[in-house]
Length: 251
View 1 (tube, rainbow, N blue to C red):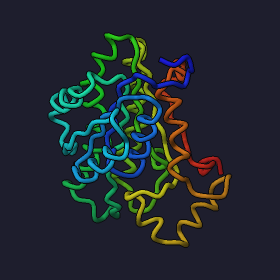
View 2 (tube, rainbow, N blue to C red):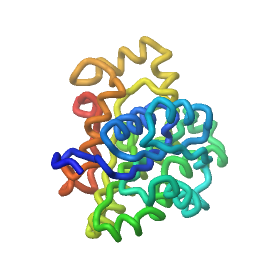
View 3 (cartoon, one colour):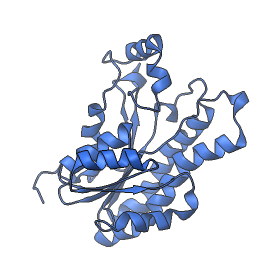
C-alpha cells in the first residue's frame, strides 16, 4: 500500500447507490484511487455501464436495498468478489418530496428504511470483519435537512436527522475497535434526486446565492472529502458530520 495518509490503495470498498449521482462519482473516484470497489444499486443496466467505465478493480451487485431485513445476506453477496469490505459508503437514498399533509405510511416507511435503517443494518453486518482487522471506515450521507427544515421534506428530513445522530451513536459503539464512522452532508448538487431543484433555474440560483462561495456544488467537490474520511488521514476523526455545502449552513 502507498505511504500516503490519504491512500485507499488495496482497500476493499462497498458503495451503495453506485449507479448514479453522488454514489457513482464516489465509487469511480475510489476505484481510480486504487481501491477494489463493489457498487450496489437497483438498476443493473446503469451498474453495468459504470462497471465497464470504472475498470477491472470493480464489481457490481444489483439489489433492492429498500428492505432492511436481509442486510446480512446482502453483505455476504457484497463480500464475494474481493472479500469483506474495509470501507462502507452508504450513498443510496430517496426523497419523495411530499408535503406533510400528503405523506402516507407507506412512503414514510420506505424513506426511513432506505435512508436510515438500511445504512445501519448493512454497517452492522460488515462491522465484525472490520473489527477483526482493527481498522474500518463507514461513511454515511446526511443532508442540509439533518438540521434544517425544507418544504415538502418532512419524511426525508426526519430520516436525515436520524442519520446524523445514528452516525454519532455508531461511532460511540464501534470506533474503539478501529472503525471510523462519519457522515457527509452535501449542499445542492446536480443528481437525479435533486432534479426538481435544478430543473427550476430560479430556485437553483437562489440556493447558489445562499452559499458563501456563490455556486452550487459539482460532484467532484465531494470526492476529496470522501477520500479523506475513507483513508488513514482521518484516523482520529469519528462521529462527525462534515457539511460539504459551499458555506450554505454558515449563512
